[in-house]
Amino acid sequence: MIQKLLIANRGEIAVRIIRACREMGIETVAVYSTADRDALHTQLADESVCIGETKSSESYLNMESIMSAAVSSGVDAIHPGVGFLSENAEFAELCEQCGIKYVGPNSEIINLMGNKALARDTMIKAGVPVIPGCDSVVEDCNEAKIIADEIGYPVIIKAVLGGGGKGMRVANCEEEFESAFNTAKKESEMAFGDGQMYIEHYIEHPRHIEFQIMADSHGNIIHLGERDCSVQRNHQKMIEESPTIVLDEDTRNKMAETAIKAARAVNYENAGTVEFLLEKSGAFYFMEMNTRIQVEHPVTEMVTGLDMIKEQISIAAGNELSVSQEDVLPKGHAIECRINAENPRKNFCPCPGHISGLYMPGGNGVRVDSAIYSGCDVSPFYDSMLAKLIVHGRNRSEAIKKMRRALGEVVIEGITSNVDYLYEILCDNTFVAGDYDVSFIEGFNSQL
Image 1 (cartoon, rainbow, N blue to C red):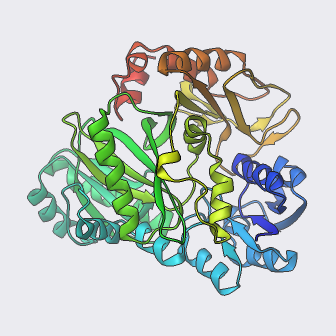
Image 2 (tube, rainbow, N blue to C red):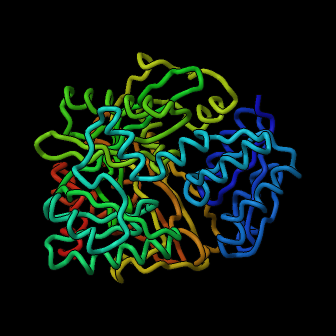
């Protein structure tokens, strides 16, 4: 059993994990940078340890400092949360070497699925449909251009070790390729310290559909249904919902079976997400697998009733899944909106500062995951997300109306947020009709 757990993260996900641990009777250790000394997660945890200065590289990405805090605190396990070190194979391996349970898959799986070229090859061998693309990584632009010609335009250039939309560019024709390739490569080198790229055919106007996977060390793998993450800007998700209204049951079942096949191909363990691109024809392709809990996991929790963080920790302790596939019976419809400290009218410019007043909505079927409070400071040094607002209704129409009501109650004084912008999306006829794809935000913004 896990008695004491360190959260190697900050913000709302750290608070979310602390709450789950408290309900499970597990002691928690929070880590923080000097900028986060008064952060909510440091106040809620049983213990808190400063791990470095403001820069992420000196704190939340400082593996040596985090492991030192873990060992000195005598923890049994580490939960990496999302972002930072949550998909870092070296960090997971350090935990393994120190005899500390890592709440997530092992380092080999993280390394395999984190490398897009290796992941793609693994999926092809497993019989999982993948987007047509190159068979190996490429660093030379001239070589890449030949590959792009063979695949056929438009193409998308991606960093092998990329994520979060970084190191990614689309070339619609041969004339655009060189500039797009060099820009993506440079961005990849700056963000990930690696200039290896790979090229895929670019699927125009797809839906971004992901399936939530849970797997234990006893060979049990289940899915918890899908999430539609197509409302996104620059490959950054903004609004997620479950279920998606565009899947018929036959396609939904095929995608679910494929997601489980993908997880089984790598002997997956713990929570993971298999992401697909879905064409209007119903054809779907494996895009990537996230080897961690997702920001949007509350959407799945709302429709299934399962606490995924508790399940993660239980799996890490060596237990079997608490539910079987037959037990997973999604009900109703859930929507999540990411509330950020940003100004949509000024190109989504980050808006850090002091929160002088705060009111968050409540009521039946409304959930808020956040780490902000009245009087706190929103740091300019980290992600701009302030809160996740999640609602659940009997159907999509009810969920949309509930989200509008909830967004209308949000009060965040002292800084600018995207709350009004999100409200406008929830009122947009295209969104309400469910007739949108990953290009939705681009069209929506052009009307502002």
